[in-house]
Amino acid sequence: MRRSLWFPAAVLSLVLSLALTARHVPADITPAPVFGYKVVHAYPHDRAGFIQGFIYLDGVFYESTGLNDQYTNPVTGQAGRSSLRKVKVETGEVLQKADVPPQYFAEGLTDWNNRLIQLTWKAGLGFVYDRSTFKQERTFAYGGEGWGLTHDGERLIQSDGSSVLRFIDPETLRETGTLPVTDGNRPVEELNELEYIKGEIWSNVWQTDRIAVIDPKTGRVNRWIDLSGLLTSAERAGHADVLNGIAYDAARDRIFVTGKLWPKVFEIRVVKK
Image 1 (spheres, helix red, strand yellow):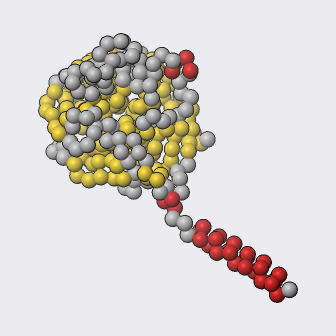
Image 2: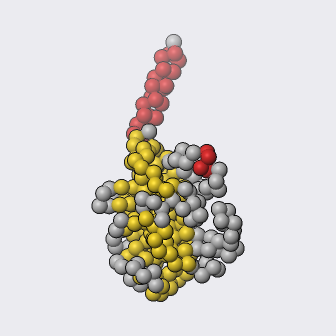
């Protein structure tokens, strides 16, 4: 009889202990919530563009396209040639273009004052252009691989394919710090194309249809945006590669996304799943 009374009491004690423990689990080990999207508008785009960097500025897109002389563009069938491009939003027409030397695989792109700053993949070399003329003003060196690039108004923010973002002084172009990125207690690897939107860093994760929205102070993923299904199966059959490209129109609060060799740019609105 005493044993039968003791057993429920022990179970109750264990349950209460687990409940109290659960209340004190650090918030940072909880995975971030996942949101969906609604397409506001779809715009035509040159599907030969292997999009690596993508920004919206003063009514047009600026794009950094990748591939070099070691790769064949599956759309054109020719050896790849990286470029810097100015593109009309409504039609996808390329308004201005500067080719990158064929040995370089261009990557992330951002603006700073009246300049455009472009990374390359493995060369450790970046290019600085005059935004109006696309004339190259200087080059600079940086550590690690070059993947994505954006800025928060004070610092450049670079991804290198790892789970760590790098901060760079926009004038000296020297690294000033790093930011490990985690979802709960898990590092988020292969951070790719970047955009800074309303105080958060948005990052494509390579080979996925997800965007990580990152707190720039803590490195924690605040939420995920699942963009599965943007392209139809027919559109994907035409050599379309992975989702890669986030641009933000701050004046009209518009978010644009696209991908490598995608025939469209999508204006989206984030919604709860």
